[in-house]
Image 1 (cartoon, rainbow, N blue to C red):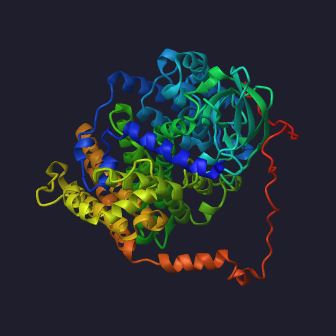
Image 2 (image 1 turned 90 degrees about the vertical axis):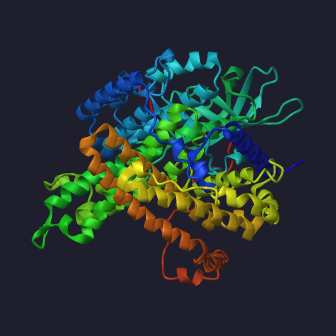
Image 3 (image 1 turned 180 degrees about the vertical axis):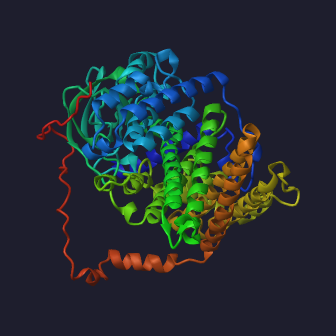
Length: 640
């Protein structure tokens, strides 16, 4: 019998290859960027949206803004750590649960651009609201059904989701995080083939405590004539055998309904299976292609709020005879906050426009927006807390209790921290994007090895084919026959785009050098790959900034100069980061850090831990056995 881990790794590779193959022929600005080809023509000029969709989206956003201003008490959400029922019901009445659902099924049918604007708006009031809406629509029942559901499934479930049925996505388990191929929750077919019996435990089920419908990933056992594998199901949350065992609490996002859900012989009709058996990972990965854009949208909204608070406080607070914003040390942080907010919004808007068009493979763009948005928004919030000083560390409730404005700066920092882990941690996103970038190089080289082989095997074979690489590399990164663009139409920003073009070619060369140097060992040089990806993220952000500034100048001439100033500021800051990342590719402490990490893991430095006490409780409360009936009271919360 083949070990489960071996099957899982092979299955994960196969699924990833299938997902890439399905979109590989579509153009991708991000993929070309890593290949050293700066294809500005893929994103410029900024494609316009449909007038009807723009009007529908603007009208809804106005109603949503009014509702949030009048009905949402953010301080109460933070204090009680839950969304009031009237807020959830009010959102449902507005149609906010059906923003992404086609009007044919009772939804609003908003564009990705307007959907993300709604998440920015609601997230700025309290991120728990945006999390509820995003988990329901970006990864919950509506998105996978829209992509893979049958007509019957869409008719049965989508109208409910658009109206008032909250959905959740259940993949993570106590022993399964970023490696979904190791899912242990089982889905055993009944003898008559009309249903499946689900057994297992799902952890960190966002919306799971209040959900009416669940998307559950479970493993169907392979058998003769049955492929088996990880499979997706739509499950009614009130089905007998489902128990919500806990409502989890976190350092931030205190209003989210996140829990632990146990399945004990839960009967799911076969007609509720999404796609074929074994297609669960493919469905999950494809859903996340656009689903990931919701998180950077929330991050962009947070950065915009931080800009507002930093501006107001730095003008009002006077020290040494001047507003603190006029002191260079503080002014530098303000410039970084404002420029980064502009860049994050530009990345989200550009990726969303490409998603709406449907003609582009946006896997890399969406992943870069998620990675970059979560990291940079955290820096922005940290800068705001520093600017606010002691008041940045003090809670909004404490500030208000002593008569000051209750600015939740410390809450923003807590809330944003999870984004560096949600929907793929920073480390996993680095590896995911690096895999796409390296595979793009291999595809451009002529698919040197078996497409079903692992990344290590591919790179190893490619690295050994040095003479072959020598033939295709010059053309790949712009040889003598390639004339660099002038980008004169971008005016003062043209120089930044020329930098992006040059840096893109340099990035492709450095990636090739790494492939040739380490060959099969490249997959273990994760910090090198991370820097490669970070360079690509900065170049994508710079491109989006320049493009957005140009678009604003065309549509709103009064803001043209201001937009160009922000784009110019961000690009100057980004260029310094890019230059430093290039330097760190080959001049770094990776080798000594690996040695120190090994020494720490082996316990050689355990004497460092003497003289302290560990207050943590021993071990998680979740039982090792993942199946069987629950002995814990059901804490499921009824909203309606």
